Image (tube, rainbow, N blue to C red):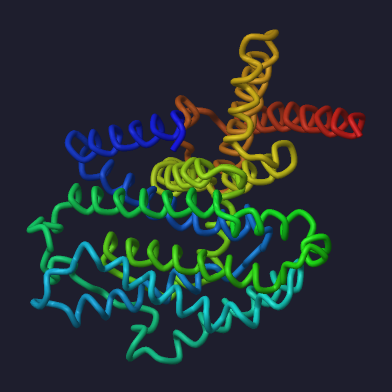
Amino acid sequence: MTHASRLGVAAFLAVTLSVAMLGGSFVVQLTTQVMVLWSFGLSYQLLFGRTGMLSFGHAVNFGLAAFITAHAVRWLAGGWPVYELLPLVGASVGLVCGLVLGYPVTRRSGVAFAMVTLGLGELVAACFLMFPGFFGGEAGVTLRRTEVASLLGIDYGRADAQLLLTAAWSLAVLAAVHWIARTPFGMATLAVRENPQRAEFSGFCTANVRWASYLVASTLAGVAGTLSALAYEIVTVDAVSLHTSANVLLLTVIGGVGSTLGPLVGATFLTVMQSVVSEWTRAWLFYYGFVFVTVVWLAPEGIVGLAKVAWMRRASDGATARTAALVLGFSSLLVIFTETAYQLALGEPTKLPGWQHLGPTALQTMLLGSGLAVTLWLARALHRAGGMR
């Protein structure tokens, strides 16, 4: 482990312990949600970021592991003290999913693989509603994590204890991803991503490399599924839906597919948008989608990649400061335009300071002015992007 990695792990542990000991219940729950999404994102980063396999059905492995975990908790209630080992159940389910589902879908790559995983995800989600006795129908399956005894004698009814367990398993997933990256198999996944034809000529069976990558990613997604079931104590059909698969794709791309820190940044961003910004405005999905489109368009390396570039240029000219000022200014104009449009369209006052007291004429003026400014700004950005080609 490098010096930077050790510092990162130390900072992660310090923040987690501080939140567990000093944070309120809401902050602890948010942090637990971030950890679950980070584990899920790490599994997708291995599949998409390292092997180049764009999957629209990754939630199948996540959701199946969560459902099996829910039933395992019921079966183990009052029995053996194995609570801390329950993520191994999810890992086993994910491995089986990778063995059964991964072999046929990884015989294809590129668009064909993406479309097959999309259809597979929708097929599994539809089947879940056909067997309500096991999957609980639309209501899902509930569980009580305190019914399984702790191996260490810890009361996991407390949210801070569950946070620490989730963080520990998230670190285990991170360690596995880092270890795989340094193995010959990890190098083979990069070769298959960059040039599958040359990898074939070098003696690799690219289909088998994709299958092995799918197996590992599915296993790690199963761990995340178990952590999700234990954290929320309910599993619904949404766990295997396209919505969940899209979320892990979005958070991985927004954070950065080229770094294991990327899914953590993306998970934090998604959690804040879903749990904080959504309480402030109904337009949070618009902002979320706009950030995704902007990142894909202007910064395919994600937020982490942007931060690295800004750090390397920190001692040069004031380009970073000017860019930050431009982004802040455009973001302010976009928020003003969007919130004003929502207030006029829905008749609901926005939570922007002072906006509740503006009349229709003032709101329409603000809408036109901010809309014109945003349009001109985007036109200038498009013109510059076209001139750079």
